[in-house]
Each structure stands twice: as C-alpha cells, then as structure tokens.
Length: 325
Ligand SMILES: Cc1cc2nc3c(=O)[nH]c(=O)nc-3n(C[C@H](O)[C@H](O)[C@H](O)COP(=O)(O)O)c2cc1C
Image 1 (cartoon, rainbow, N blue to C red):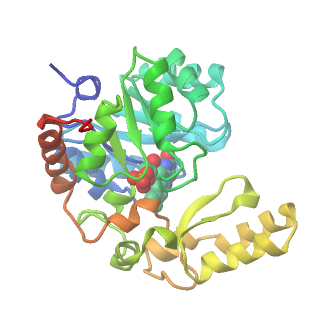
Image 2 (tube, protein in one colour):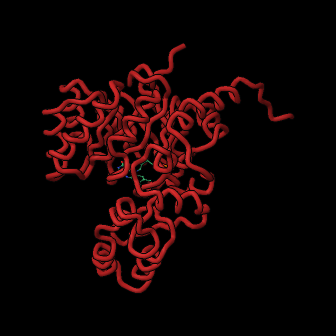
Image 3 (cartoon, helix red, strand yellow):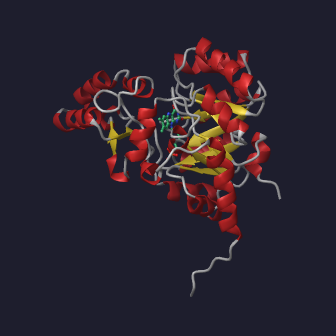
C-alpha cells in the first residue's frame, strides 16, 4: 500500500512543514526535504528576487522536492509570487488563504502553477474552502485547525478533519494544528488523515535559522501563554504572551474596532523581524506560536520530527486498540 500524500508529492514521509513567513527560510526547507518531508519556503510576502535567491539556496542544499508559499489573496504580492514561480519553477506550491476561497481565482492560479509542473498543496480553514480546493484541482489538502500557529483559523482541527475526510475522497487530506506527539499522529491517521503538517514544531527545530531566543521562548511557554492578537484587524494570530502582546490586547480592549486595528498595525510593524532576526522576545518582538508550545520541551532535529515521529506513530498504529468494553 502506498501513501497517497507521498505519491502525490514525491516524498518519503507524509509530513509537510507549514509555510512560516521569514521563518521557514532555505536552511529549514532544505533540512525538512532532505529528511524526507516537504519543506515549504515561507515566501508569501517576499520580493521576487529574494524568493529566487532562496530557491537557489535550497537547490544548493538538496535535490529533494520542496514547495513555495503563495498567499491566495488578490493583489500585487500574488502576481509577484506567481510570476516568480513561472520564471523559476519549483516542485510544489503551497497556497493558503484567510478569507473564503473564491473558485474562479483558485482554479486560475492552480492552473497557472500546474502549467509550470508544480503540484498544488492547498491549506484550508473550513469545509467550504476544502470543497473549492478539491474542485479547482488541488493535489493534496491540508486541514488547519484553530489551535495551529500563525494566522488564527476558525474551526477546531478535529472537527475540520472529520468534515473533510467525510466529504472528500479524491484528494488526500492532511491534519494540521497542534500536532507534536506520536499519539496525536496516530490519532489523526485513525481519524482519516493521510499525512500531517507541523509549523511550530519545525520552528523550534535545530535547523530553523531563527534567533535562539525565539525557540527558547516557545519551549518555555505553556498552552495558556498563547494569546490571540489582532482580532480587530480581522487577521488575528497566536502570539506568546509578552509586553508587545499585552499592549496589543490592551489596545483591543480600550479602543473601538477600526481605531484599534490602526493602532495594532502601528505597534506590530516589524515585530516579527525584531524577534526572529534580532532575538528581542520580551518588549517589541512578536513570538508567533501555536497552542502546541506546551508540548514542546526541547529542540529536535528535522529527522527526529519526521522519521522519528512517523516510526513511533506507526508502532502505535500497529498495536491492537480497543475501548475495553
Ligand atoms: C511563526 C509562524 C509563521 C507562520 N507563517 C505562515 C505563513 O506565512 N503562511 C502560512 O500559510 N501559514 C503560516 N503559518 C502557519 C503554518 O504554516 C502552519 O499551518 C501552522 O503552524 C500549523 O500549526 P502548528 O503550529 O500547531 O503546527 C505560520 C506559523 C508560525 C508558527
């Protein structure tokens, strides 16, 4: 029996490293792909020449398949990503969206990327988007739950996975959001997933080229340290509680929505780079992490997070299971 995710993407283990803006850069992408998963360049907001440089760097480190992120939202950045990936084709594209997925736009962009030879990985936040992604021709679909890092999704990962596997059979579904332990991986396979995605776990990996202070902050955080910041902007993301997060929460409590959104943009400008590049994780830097941080207690290698986790999960799946009734 061949796993459909591995076959579709040409990878050894059905593990995708979630795109992470300015975090999943070439060294992490190459390490994940070399370890048999699918590394994804977090280039959703990068200028074209930077994307080209990162792709060249990945290719110098591995000949295994990898993907580039496209944020499926109309605008200049979408055209920058698409035209760059037409100029420099890659094995797969990884498309995410925050708003409801528009069928015509999805089909047009998927077709454009497929014409370059790329496989299409669609990350969705709700059942409706999953159905649109399937109809538009996605090769695999990632079901991202609300507990997952980065921009906050809306639906619980457990519910969304169940909805998608009940409704979609032509395309394999991967579970995403809050995954770190072998029992969780075994559980999502029992629930119908054929692969899984992790973001926060790979952010804390040895090979991730972000400042060690960010990894330490995430490793020391517990589930309750994760707060939703930027609700007034309509695009909230999970952050580890620190002085910046407290300021953002206070703004949202004190001001009407439109005013709060403007102030949030001001105080958070450049905050991701302050943390991941400069290591400022207490006052002005934004430390993005999913709720899974409470399970992460040490830095691991990408091999441990891919081959190790899959082997341990497979061993659990081979054991007899019963409700003991
Ligand atoms: C620091 C960080 C940055 C992220 N940036 C992006 C991004 O640019 N594009 C995207 O599609 N998802 C982004 N995500 C979400 C991840 O791709 C992935 O879906 C999510 O982390 C999975 O949940 P987990 O963190 O619980 O494993 C980001 C996540 C983190 C932790």
